Amino acid sequence: MNLIPAQPYDYELPSDLQKVALLIIDMQRDFLEPGGFGEALGNDVSYLSAIIPTTKRLLKIFRELQLPIFYTIEGHQPNLSDCPPSKLHRGNSTLKIGDAGPMGRILVLGEPGNAIIPELQPIANETVISKPGKGAFYQTQLESHLNKQGITHLIITGVTTEVCVQTTMREANDRGFECLLVEDATASYFPQFRQSTLEMIRAQGGIVGWTATTANVIQALD
Ligand code: TIU
Image 1 (cartoon, rainbow, N blue to C red):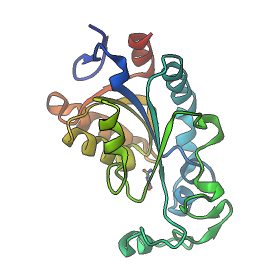
Image 2 (image 1 turned 45 degrees about the horizontal axis):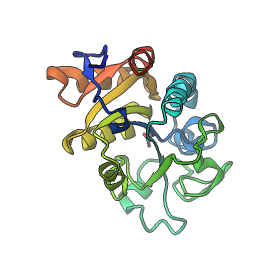
Image 3 (image 1 turned 120 degrees about the horizontal axis):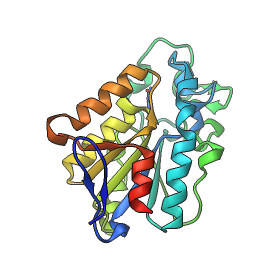
Image 4 (image 1 turned 30 degrees about the vertical axis):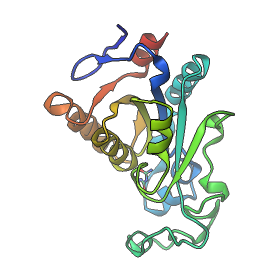
């Protein structure tokens, strides 16, 4: 039995590792680089790049073992038909979703700013899911992809911990997936929110799932 040392207790991997997917959430230029949606919301984007090396290490081992890899991107159709008015008008920044920014139209699919960062570019046989909301299961094909491939376990990484990552993990947990959030491969513009999210997820015997370090995940898979 392969166990990942985790909190609140060891995370058991299935004997068939093809049932374990790496999920990399919203590591797109919009959130990590200056001039995108994250900065338009008033955030200091420098907090997020710290997790690029750990995410790369996880990507490397999943690729070496030929295990399933999924990425998400938060973005909207160019006509914004999939962006509810509540999301479009929220906040008081001058740059809104759909406006032209330094990296193209903010949070619009296909724009330069909407691309996954160069360090984590997907390769063949890896699945990219674009999503209009914070949760990756809302109005996407993610669930059917996972079910079709028989995936039962999700190793979750990405940004931002308390927004898209936590929403997605809760959605996945309710759908019966065994979820582990990688502590040093998730980041927030608010370090205290990241810490609180890790704690609330694993509280109450793992009410939403597990957390573990990159090193522990890799050691168990190796
Ligand atoms: N603003 C913020 O923290 N996050 C988002 O808007 N999206 C994601 O978390 N990806």
